[in-house]
Image (tube, rainbow, N blue to C red; front, side, top):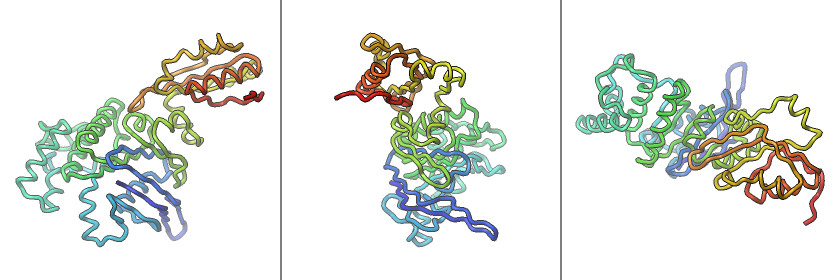
Length: 343
């Protein structure tokens, strides 16, 4: 549905040149919710603005539904843009217009009939749960309600793609949850493809199918959410994962235990999360596992658990225990082999 090929974006001023995007490629499947995460300055917002050419790439190609946007005339580009909705952190509502007018005015500017405008406004206000607020002004609404109006406005153009640029960053945790649930409902009921930009791993965890991790204008890691959560490769992805699980071990504890065995992180996914594997390795091998910290979280489709465990035992027994864990479908991170097992 969305395909970015080798996108580079250079911002040039009189005294400075900034590579906001550096050879970025991304493919978002039709009907999916795709998250792009990174810290401030990673290039996320520039990336999402490439999809509807609010920012034009210095080089590279942008495809939406098979059309290469960078080659279209202004008229044809505007037609494609009508099928690409966008919501922002700051809501971008007209403060002197009512909720109804905030949705109706953009439709009127695109030539939609008055009757159709009325029908769409009422329809999408109902979708976002604000059918009783059509005469209210933005100043009378909470932050979450303002974002719902912005979502209804984007939906009223009946887009095939919805771009969300830090859409929940200005909201409190409870309101964030409700907006994420709404976006998931919209994706499910209307089949709209959602590209979501965020710096919060919780947002990705809650609703995304796939995720790309950005750093310094580049995508450094991407894949399905479960894969990234259970087997992060980059240091940045690992930092984000730690923000969810909070499984740091005090340095003094690490120092006290390092000569008595190995400290490993175990990731349990799906069926493996219900297996009593630590009890089994203590019986099958001469290894004594001690849980230092642990947590379990719910991804969009299934649970993911993480345990930080100290394995005390001889090197050969520990190696056999780790192999057993891996054969049971558990990802083991941090283990340093001290012996080689014979096959």
